[in-house]
Length: 94
Image (tube, rainbow, N blue to C red; front, side):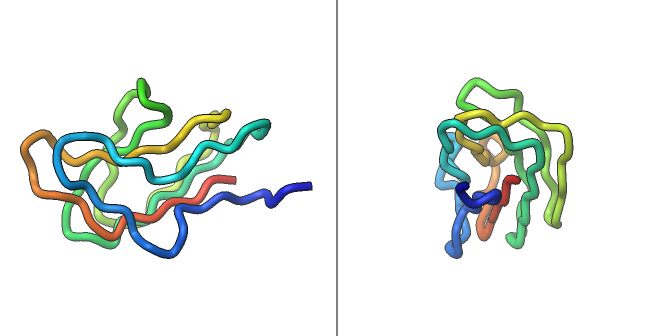
């Protein structure tokens, strides 16, 4: 059986413009129901599941989301339009 967790890795993700940035890669043939975002940077922003997902606000903190469905899709982060870049963002799905 494969690892029940998938993380963004040890290097924090960051945005460079208003474009969404991949945080966690897609995992084929697995369904994840939990997501944790760790935002160690100074700026709030959004995450979304899949490239067409609905943006959900994340604060500068640790936030956990249960009852999500992540099935072979990437998790992205995105800064506020025209805002400052997000830095040091990590994620875990399980």
